Amino acid sequence: MKPCFSLLKEKSFRLAPSSASRACDMGLPSGGLWLSGSGAGEEKGYRGVVGSRCRRPQRLRAAAASWPAALHSPADVGQAKWRRCGVKTTLIIAVPTGIKVFSWLATLWEGRLHFTTPMLFASGFVSMFVIGGLSGIYLGSVPVDIHASDTYFVVAHIHYVLFGGSLFTIFAGIYYWFPKMTGRMYNERLGKIHFWMTFVGFNVTFFPMHYIGLRGMPRRVADYAPEFGNWNLAISIASFAVGASTLVFLYNMLVSWRRGEPAPGNPWRALTLEWQVSSPPPVFNFDEIPQVVGSPYEYGVRGARHAVLNGKRAEAGRPPEPVESIHS
Image (tube, rainbow, N blue to C red):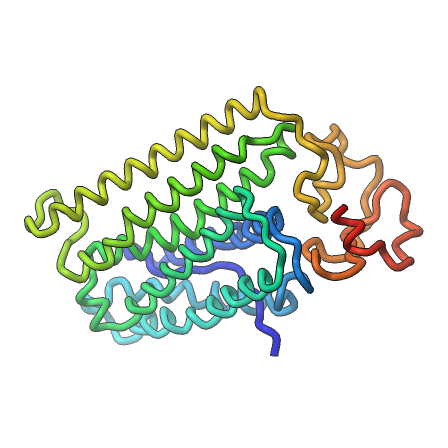
């Protein structure tokens, strides 16, 4: 059975049930950004997106489970029996999410990866989101949820899901479409510095919170036990590193926009429509409406073609050119 592909969800904002649905809404564009960002650094070895045919049901299952999943948040303060379903759906939601993660990994499998800046951020997103999802499973257990409630463990979990699961893909999308938007290439070296400062700083900031949270470090307090002092000092320093990485990003964007190298029409050798015209695109985008004839992500499918442009509609009925020619 082929693995299925689904787009994001999440569940563990601890404020209100609607927070889970907002996290699910956040995940939908993140999944699309991941597909594009990873396409900037991969020539698929043998196929396109794995399990793409059943992405809709998995997406709906994740969205449906995310609504009641937020009810696990007040499980430690007492609630009506019917609201305990949030604990169960917190665990159930791991199923479509796991299918989605395996789909992403299978899509990358046997691909020829080029770790450009968009690809680095797309890869970082997968690893960070998996860590956040695994910690969420623990919160689906009532005894663990009671012990970890209002501690740094919850802070770490939600930041791995929302920061790692959204900001990394946002940066991947910005770097990926920057040449198309501006007609200039960004500085690749500065882009990689930005990624590693963000990646390392983020993990040093939030990963220790899992440990000290279970040791009893509460969130939203000004005073805490002396044993947590050194931990919080290291976390604070690392958080400033994350902030400094944003300055690198802004400098790269502003300087590259003004003085960057002119961008070719399709620097990523992508198949999607926007990369089939010049960068930046002309005023009316296309001389005529393109005819879509295939998937935009089938980099490893021989003869794959996404669209027919510029009056070549007759070619749509012929076998398309080999994938090596597309990526030449």
